[in-house]
Image (cartoon, rainbow, N blue to C red; front, side, top):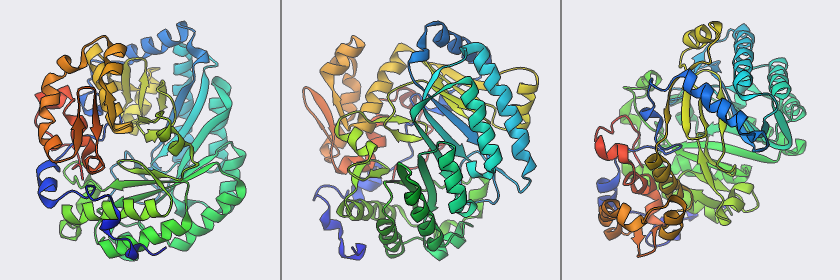
Length: 472
């Protein structure tokens, strides 16, 4: 299937927003992997508060209720200019062993507060580059976790992979360690784009890894792409899409590049004149939706696609889709223990984040402290608004009666100002509001973050949104 034969008219007629709509509604806004968003975390929430939340979970006998584990591995061998992740660029492999020593200390502090044997149904390694750890290091990490937590036999165990750091033999080792889901960071197959972002990886390398992963029986394989990178244009990205369709991963995460050089120093190496303009970006997104839909992928929402038989697509059909700090997920709304430098977790009605630098992270652990440096205890209003925002982001639908019953409110009167504030978006065909519900339209999915922002109490009180990426 040649994507150049798929025109924007292959989309529903109302899907592609007009340039005027783009100019009006494309502003900075959160991605809502949480609500409240991480920029609202405060240092008044301490490691002691987090330990108390862990203790409450353990004391409540919640070990039978599954939780998720996230482990952040910050190391990378080389710098990708677009990257906004917390990372440490180094070729000193011995740093990984020291980091594992400190992860072991952090795990022990968690177990002291939580108790041993909590059931884990989902484990994810992110970074950075988790495969910076060698086979021995990864085996040590899984063994450490397995000693202290009850890793469910049918757990989802995933890892983010830089294709330049692995081969078929390493994938086989990952399978032996229990990993059943992989995510390959591709971003773009175009040579000029790869050079502009300092990430050279031939397409043949990724295709060989996909063949190996399939033969090893991995349950699900994801490919990450980014649109809006320097040197990208519609034709070059069409070629990448054609290659991705040939690769046929189970899932595709298609992210918009957020150019924030004032916040992320590596992005200062990207020439702004090389970036596609907002109109070109939305056309890339529209064509991506058309091409991937024609290739049989289900559009999950905002930045995710999946084949119809993938668990993410099934969860979308059944209304069981969730959103967490890694994006869209099938995992039920549950507690998340996050380990490692800068990692963000959630226990009960709290969020927490670890120290962002290795120096501070190590120092706190040497002192015998859980390395949480900030977080938030959610109010009743936070919990309510989180439910509304996540319903919009995941289902594109808010049922007034269901929300009213779940949160003991009258939705229409409680959110009367917010419903009124949706009027401009309703007028532009981005949302439908009835006496019973709010619905995101196909065109509205381009701006679903903006629709959700209407219900963000913190943003309504703070109009300084330049710290966020643009919606499109």
